[in-house]
Image 1: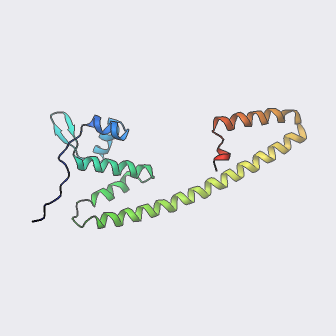
Image 2: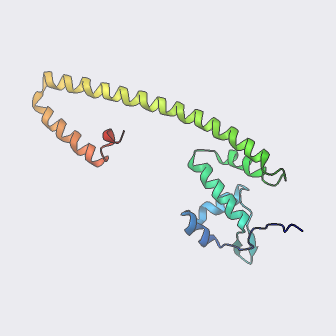
Amino acid sequence: MPMELRRPARTFTIRQLCLEFKCTPRALRFYEDKGLLAPARDGMNRVYSYKDRGRLQLILNGKRVGLALAEIGEILDLYDLNDGGAAQNIKSLTKFRERIVALEAQRQDIDKAIDELRSGCDALEAQLSRTRPDLLPRAADYDQVLRERLGDLEHAK
């Protein structure tokens, strides 16, 4: 007779989840208010189940990749359909692909902005070299300090 596999019956406090996931109690209460988490209560204390912990992990991963809470909620709502996760996987795949397209468009916009800023810097340096070449060493010094403070992002590419 096959034995049904079950998740451990372990529970978590709000403090334990906050420490594990590096989030605030306020964030967990916010997710609860939005209907994304539904911890049990033991008096005034929230008691989070293994399932709540998994949902929190999905919420935070979704936020990390830029999904809106409503989109995350749509995915989480499909968890209990007893279809082996198929509907949830399809919805997730669709949302992830949409997010990839949006992020790629943002990357193109950022690359264009960087190119425009570089062109602007070149034009300003050229103008300074014609009108006030004495300021160029200070401009170069400023540029060096700025690069050091930003971790030399130019070379990180």
